[in-house]
Length: 508
Image 1 (cartoon, rainbow, N blue to C red):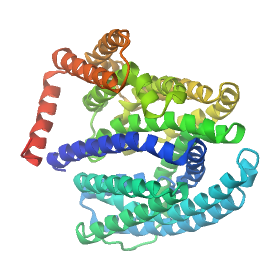
Image 2 (image 1 turned 60 degrees about the vertical axis):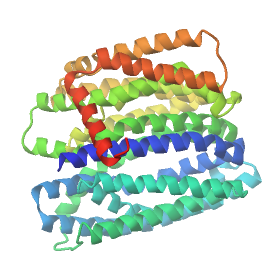
Image 3 (image 1 turned 135 degrees about the vertical axis):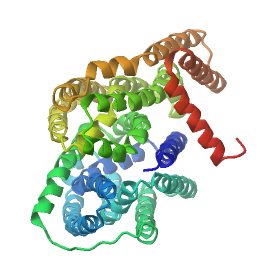
Image 4 (image 1 turned 60 degrees about the horizontal axis):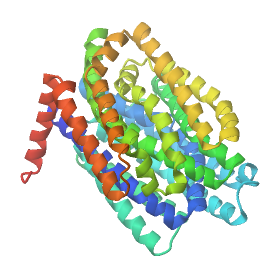
């Protein structure tokens, strides 16, 4: 794969994520005010419930990415064509199952929320759930073309399409909400966009990548190989739904849509934070595939993890520092003073989740080595143990209890157990990884936060004060990082990105 594709793809991934984050941060309070607290909570609740059906993808999207990358590096066209034919046959069955299970879910929503939703909320919930089921039935197979393009290393195209989708979605939704439409209109627009973008990817794959889907042989052994690989990615998808969405469902059953709205805002910020690290690691699967196929040692893979982990931590560290210093004021202006608890819930999760977020390349290495089974099993245990803990703490402490449960689970499993596996089973030098990844960057974060708290102690209030504090944190972090945090190769990397930006935008 061309280095330009990796650099440009990673750069555009961050443009995509920054655009997603900032548009989301600006759009969320607008959405909250247009829908109202209860309907916003209802919208997030139904999205969480239907999201459990989305795991019926069975991990095939990520499996496609891995196998297409593999066949491209091997230049094995025939196997790729047979693989694609087999995958789309499986998707046909999945779509039928989504329709069946989704219909049963819509017909039996009252079993879960009869006592927590009003009649009006319940009526809207059924309509939204039905539309989202239809969305999933079509967008799961169509979404496969996105991963085919990624497997070909077309990260620029993938991210440009993603950027266009974000702009279209925000523009259309703002117009409709101002016209008085509510949550049902949102899920209709999302359905149209998901299906439309899926069709665009399909046209691109057939017309520009010239992919062909041919079933040369219906090989059950090959299907077993695909399913064995994808099964544990599927388990990870179940874990993600159980772990990250159980809080909203718990609060929806035992509390109210208002409590759901409170926790949903925290979760929104956590999701944006997590995306910052995934932008880089996702584009490195083809490179990791080549290294593994060449028999790279654990120390070589550790070096790559350190290289990518430090870049991830540089970006995460800036956001974490800024949130610790200015987050409380930001949330007050962003969502409203009544959402002050969101700061503490979010911070409680931000701090521990930072570690697995700058180790995401480890997960890519596990997938390429087909050793992701343990990770999936560990995360499944984490999610299952988190359910009763979330229910108990959620009933006692509300949304804050869900945050506590989430943070404890991350520390035990995603930091403790998984790093043990990296060290003793994969050959990653974990002590070296942490020592070299944190070097210079962690002290920069700590000093930036301490200096930021001194500014906070001055008692400045208002939007202008918040903006000035954000600028102070950013400038302090960048200056400290430049002098003490980055090594020479990292300075060269960031300098290289500056050259790319100048090439793309001559006026910069």
